[in-house]
Image (cartoon, rainbow, N blue to C red):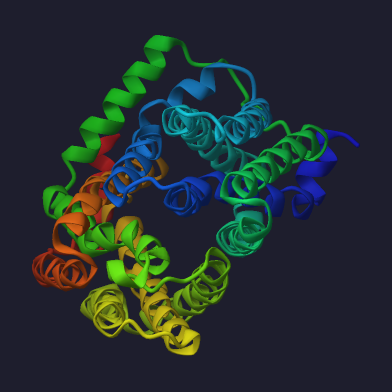
Length: 430
C-alpha cells in the first residue's frame, strides 16, 4: 500500500500506535523507574533526583526541533527513535544484575529520554503535516486515549506484573523481564510503523543549518516579547509547584514500610490503584473539565480549576498520618486526587494554548511553553527526595500542602490578554 493511501484514508492504522509509543517511554521513566529503583534498594533522594534529571530532554526538545526538518523524513525519525528506545530498554534489562546497575541504567534512561523527546517532535510534526485540519480534529481524541492507554498499560499492567514476579523469581529478575517487555514492544512498534506510517516528507527546499538557527532564534525572541509573557511563565512554573514536590514521592511512600511511615503496598497493589484506577479518574476529570471550562470560559474557571488541582493533594497527608491498611480507603483517596488532577490540569493546558501560544509560531511557542512547564516540574522533583528524607513522609506531605499556596497566588494575579491582542501579537511577530 502506498504512503498516499495510508495518509488520506487510514490514520486509524497509525495514530493510536504512534501516540501509544509516545506515552510508553515517558511513563516508564517518570513513574515505573521509581518503583523499580525502590525495589532494588535505592534511596528516595537518589531516585527522585536522578529520575527527574534524566527527563531534561523533554524540557529542551523545542531547541532541536527545527533541525529535524533538515534531514530525512519524519517517518524515518519515528522509526529510528522507536528502534533505539527498544534496544536501550533491552540493554537496561541486562544491566540490572550488575553491581553498578544504577549508573548504567540511568545512562540508558538518559538515551531513552533523548530519543523519546525527539520521537515526540517527529510524531507531532507528522500528525500535523500529513492530516488535514478536519482530520486532525477528528483524531485528536485518539491521541489522548492512546497516550493514556500507554499510561494504564505501563503504570498499571506492567507494574502489576512486576509485583507478581517479584514474589516468585525475585526483584531483579522481575524487572529484567518488565524492561525486556518495554524493549520488545518498542521494537515491534518500530517495525510496524516502518510499514504503515506515512512518510510525512516536507515539500520544497529543506532549510539549511543557518535557516534552522535563524528560526530557533526568532522563535525564542518572539516568545519572550509576547505581552504578559513573564507573568505567564510564572504561572506555568508555579501552577504545578506542589505537584512537582509530590509526583516522585507518592509511589515511593506507597511502597515504603509502615515503620518508615509508608503504606507498605506491594508493587502489584500500586499498579492496580495508582496506575489503573487513578489514571481512569484522571481521564474522567479531564473530560468533565473540558465541558466545564467551555461553559464558563478560562478566565472565569481558572481559580476553580486551580483548587481542583491542588486541594486533593491533602489526601496524601491524610494517608501519611493515618496509614490505613484498607485498600478501598487508599484507592478512594488516590482516585479522588487523580480526578482533581485531571480536572485542574485542563486549566494549565488551555492557558498555554490560549494565552501563550497565539501568534506567528503558535505550535513552536506552545512547545516552548510545555518545555518551561517541564523544567518547572523537574527542579522541585529533583529536590523532593532530599526534602522527604529530611522531613519524613507525614511532614513532607504537609509541606506539599504549603507548596500549593504559590499556585493560588499566581492564579489570582496572572493577567489575561484581550482577544484583540492575538492579531497584534501575530502582526508584531511576522
